[in-house]
Length: 410
Ligand code: GLY
Image (tube, rainbow, N blue to C red; front, side, top):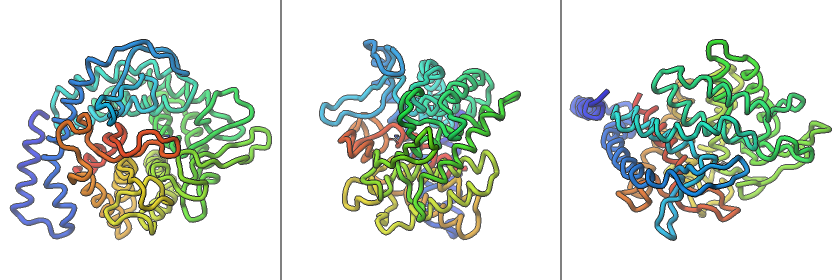
């Protein structure tokens, strides 16, 4: 794997020399740039790792999830020009190690493997956290990628323990995993479409040798219930749905991170597109495939979707900030979906993903040097209604951007 980028440069040059750009010029042009993009991304992340490593150990932080003195880079504090380090229990702490795994896959450089292992290993305490659903996302992006990329079963027990922990948040009467809030809360049972991303860990664990099939049943039930209650007829996603645990009915819909209850928060839509595509991959259930298409058609055909493919942070907020992280998640989902769907429809999804990745790879979005602490993508929005991290780099934006480029390179 050592000289993977060199091999890719030669392959790209060969494609250019033979003029095989006929089918899709935009795709061929982006593919030809992949070696250069991965090389730049690798340089950025080498610098980011060097800046973050001395900050890995800090003061003991007490979070709802537990105490730890270990930190992972999450973003960049534009106002003070400093890295934003978060506790290992922060919901995105698996994304930086996950990006290092993707860079190892892209470059074959052992440096990224050793740094990915170092940052992944400190996240193990997440396997026991029951206070939110997010720790399963953390574990899948870090240890899950270690398993997939190294092809090892060394982390299976830890991933299985994580699935057991997540199962404690599952209510069999509702058939749903509680996303936010404590397990014992009798008044509220909050579910968000972001939760679909964790179902991958349940599916992975259920397929391990001797894996518990209960986890597959939970994942399917959660996906089915979410399909029923979380989306409007046109395919637009709602963010927070609160269930009444006595009547088993929806008791409230909240805008959450979105602009309103009647619009679609862009990253929530993206999580759902990705989640149902992944559920089709894992289960082969065609309903999930059809639903992923419906959600994707909503997003890419929306009148407020800008022509360059990077959505505003909410589909109901045209003219406001764009969210590069939503575009990256969508692009990765659309590339996988395109492969399942095939034909004209698949080509449409693929072309849209290529457009998004081309925009994200332009100087408008892809950072040069250290302007944003060596993260890759500018212009992400974490939580606009709460005024948190608006127009800024986000670790998960980089992670799905790299994942999507890897999917494109296949
Ligand atoms: N709630 C997870 C996210 O911001 O996407």
